[in-house]
Amino acid sequence: MNLDDEVRRHLRDTGEQVALTPGLVDAVRVRAATRARRRRLLFSGLSSLVAVALVGGLLAVLFGGSDQDPTSLEVAALAETASKSEDSQGETTQDSEAQASIASTNPTYETVPLATDNESQSSALLSKNSAQTDWIEVTGPVPGASTEYVYSGDTVLGHVGTEWFVRDESSWRQLDLPDSLDVIAVDLGVGEDFLRVGGWLGDDLCSRELVIQVKNGNQWEQYEIPDQLAPGVVSSVSGARLRVTDHELAMSRIEEIAVDPVCLLQSLGIDAVEAEIVDDLVYATDPKAGRVIYSLSKFGPLEAQEFISSGPSERSLLVRSTGGGKWTTTPLPDYEVTELGVVDGIIMMEDAEHTVHDGQRLKRTEVIPSDAEQLIDALVTSSGMSMLFERDEKIWLRDTDGEHLLSQVSDQPVLWGRLGRVSAEVTIVVETQQGQALWVSGQ
Image (cartoon, rainbow, N blue to C red; front, side):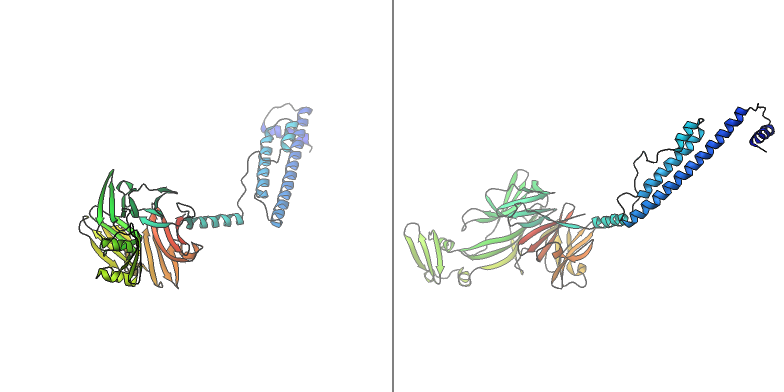
């Protein structure tokens, strides 16, 4: 049975009354041939694309690949070709069907390559590293100058010579302090509107006074710290801490006390421009008479005699007053500045048993690591506890990332460290042979 017979039987079975003409049968034959040719072209194109994809993947493996996955591009082109080929089935002319069978293999959209195993590992490593804490050294307020750092409240102060600076987020700003005062300590526990400063009032070394001045708005109040030194003995303060609350003033300081020959002569009623003590004699320059020599034995017993014999001595002490009137003095055993913190409105002093920050007073034996020799400092934050401790004659830092040597934070050998909080950031002041340095943590 030929094709014409099959067509006639099909039309007869379906009951359709269609006049069969040679032209109709020819049209059916042409459509069948075109459809067969289109299928052959499609399968030929698919085979070629698969072969190209396999070759491209093999080359990518051999030569290390590139930023884009070539197989993803080929798959996208293949999908585009198949889609266009299916859409072309509804065309009625032979020319349009031929055009659909030769659809372009280049995608008309931007492709996103799939991540390779190496890229996934690199991304995971980057995320892990970014979650670790990086310690960044903060440049001092005066680049190149030696700076001493002091924590006060949620701020850190930089002290360079006679100038004081406060850290504002990422920059330093100089504090506006009284011109008449040689400032040795600053308290910013409640902000600059209630600035509290301690220092020397007066330019004369022999008669200057140690005072605390408290700023309340535009008004200043002054409290004098009584001088408890013998006549002729002067103090030279090398460091101090100051804390002031609504009902208490406290200052911790370390100082060197020694006899000043000019001040000693002035306390005896003798005017001198300069003076020097050698053995039992005082060589002085009188403003009118010029060079004069005095014998200390002729002055009788002197309260400052022990300092004349032994020379300068260093001491550390804490003075405090509840109303600025009666002051109490407490000698401290270590020759260092004792840190002060305000806990529940009370000024507390750091000692051998406790470490103190504003709002925190921690017992060292309760937080020190079991294998540590000494706890230097500890600070509780919202993310956990940070601490500095000594182990194996080295200083270690423990934070949320674990333990590591403090020498890994600073490229200089670390002799001492102090934790602090500046707004939401944890900082460390480290003491090296080159001086102090400030480090801030960042995520």
